[in-house]
Image 1: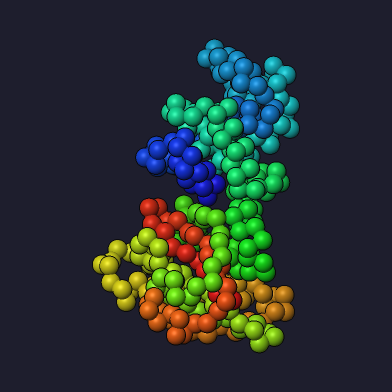
Image 2: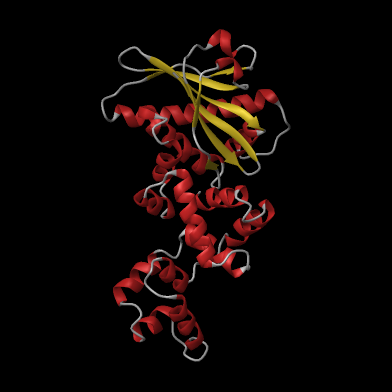
Amino acid sequence: MIAQILGNYFVEKKLLTKGQVQNTLKKQSGLKVRLGTIAISEGLMTLAQAEAVNMLQQSIDKPFGDIAVQKGYLTDVQVSSLLREQGSEYILFMQTLNDDGLMDVPAFEEAVKQFKIDTGATRTTLEAMKAGSIDAIIETYTGDTMGDLTRHAGTGIRLFTRIVDKDAYIGKASKSNDISALNQGVFQKLIRPDGTSYYTGIVEKDHGLYAVAKGFAKEQFEDDELFIMDATGEFLNCVNGLYCTTMSAENVVLEIEPQIFLSSENIPSVISGTEILHVPVFIGDDSAELIFIL
């Protein structure tokens, strides 16, 4: 997810084009991050040292890590740790952009520093985001907006990436209070032990409901509204069911009512609420919103 988020940010800042980011994400699939790239990113080696090892590999038939240890640039423990990081999505994204001449490592790291400032990410959460932590990404993108619903949102986003599309990613969360402004979607009511309740929903943005339904159903189908709403509703039910199961293990029992499809016109007559929390979810070129209505 971090590669998609950074790629979208780079496009917004006009550092890259949308096409360049899409091509990079496709190209990096299945690639392996070079040990030297990770070592530089972690501050364990300089660019000059990594290049020196690469040059030696042209005449010495040894792995990068063995030569780096031999030269005194790395220790055996550091090499072992770096080898575990070779699947890093963050590093792979940086490496692919660098290899294609789109953004070198210093420029990439400078852009990430600005990303940290713009999003308000702490050093700790940024490092967790780099390591692929969805919880850290959600914490950064929701901030104080979600309150006690952050965990619920986390369950939803994880299922988006596990079930709908492994490359799905989120945008900055926001609040609103106009129920009548919501687009059509699928909604489900949850009742807390104290009797208070809230609605969750997946609502339309840019063909997002179709993308959710197609990803969940894992099949091609015509743009049929009934099928789309049924599949999206089943996915929402999975999200809320898993969240309720998680909470029940902590002795918090939530009740779930059946999911319902509502058009934009009839939402205000069925659902009441004074606060709406929006979490944008991007699935390829499409987008939807995971929402909570309090």
